[in-house]
Image 1 (cartoon, rainbow, N blue to C red):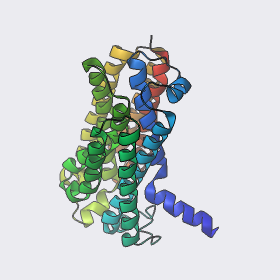
Image 2: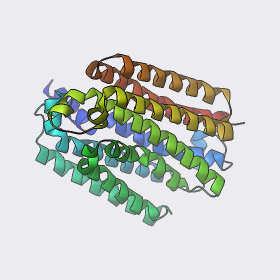
Image 3: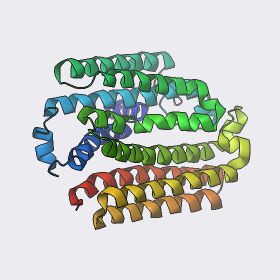
Length: 310
């Protein structure tokens, strides 16, 4: 029982479910580039022989991304411990006393260093562009730096959302888009991820409204009220769907993609209804769960839809 509890503490600390999603996103981004550039939409063939990077290189890229994403999530808890306690966020291990901030900080530094080392190995031995090292360092700075800008509210929401696009960005660079058209499509997919993530961050602030108010954390919900923040989040969700539609028209244009997009739109509609009609704490908690589903459905639309591109 103690071992199970300890495992849960680490799982909650590093949000491994999100980290695994990020690692999968690396593969998905690479596969999307592979197919759009004229490759066969066969995922197994892509893994074994995509003409650019071997399967062990892809696995290393996924591990580096998992370490990076996990460390960024955990380091945020180090800085947020007082606010988390005020918000009764005992789903966070540090807030419930499972780990000390110093211990978590050291673990995060170790994870960051490992992700950098793996990236250097990819550049030296797997023909990956050296720019990837720069972007890994950039995303580490973004992840840690968020803790210094998050009290700025909306800027903090957008700042942390850059971290959400990091896995896709890394995946695109592993495979290297080869012309302006492909790069434009990649940027649109990144925009979908960024907009959806920013909307989700605003929803999270709505959930934490009461505690943020007590601790002088000037989130968007505190600055303009939960209802005002809800309307801003809805705008982001709407633009997310519009950008996804553009990608669908330009590249995907198949029934499977449109079905996934329809479900995504329904989830975001339900999220919007919830944050508008329910109290911040309860409505925000439900909506936060819905937006987690929306991340999976967006990823599914781009990944599964690519198998059916005409």
